[in-house]
Length: 249
Image 1: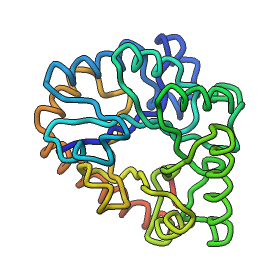
Image 2 (image 1 turned 180 degrees about the vertical axis):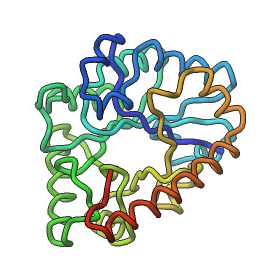
Image 3 (image 1 turned 30 degrees about the horizontal axis):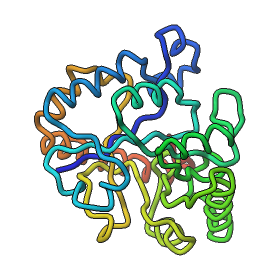
Image 4 (image 1 turned 90 degrees about the vertical axis):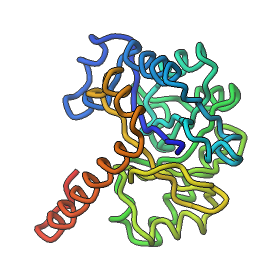
């Protein structure tokens, strides 16, 4: 019953979080909160996976976690905390946003890869892949993969969908352009990557403190079932909003 956790941004202090736009703030954790998550998980006997485990038997472990980060934020604080605990993760970057204020630069992404973390693609920019025509979709996924590979000097094997928006067409094109796994926001347990292209994740926002995470990890099956029910409702709401002129966020 291994789980993949999806984070976005970790900063040093509450003041640093308050500086973010209100739309981003719910996805920003402080150093203390993130460290508390790691310590809580370890207290409960959960092991943190690396990418090598992801391809092996680690995905079948009963209490194992893989950490992922979306959106290219310069997650230096998250990297520092993970380093203190000997944890490696996957950082999904928008290739077209490298070097933007508050984002990783290409050199920083390369150093992150050299230190043992995995660099994945979050497309070129943060646009919903489901809204792109297929030629444009193919171009975006190929361009981001190549740009990140050129920056980091190693293969980019994984893709994460901006906004969690994906469908069968997006997954098919992602596989065709060479990605080995496609990480989405759909809740579920980690399966074998050898058998499953879609990797399900559990989103972690700033409202998940250490005690709430403790309750979640004590009952992972209940966690996944609750998140699945919520996800289905959100998908229905998104479908309804598309019929009325917008996909929503």
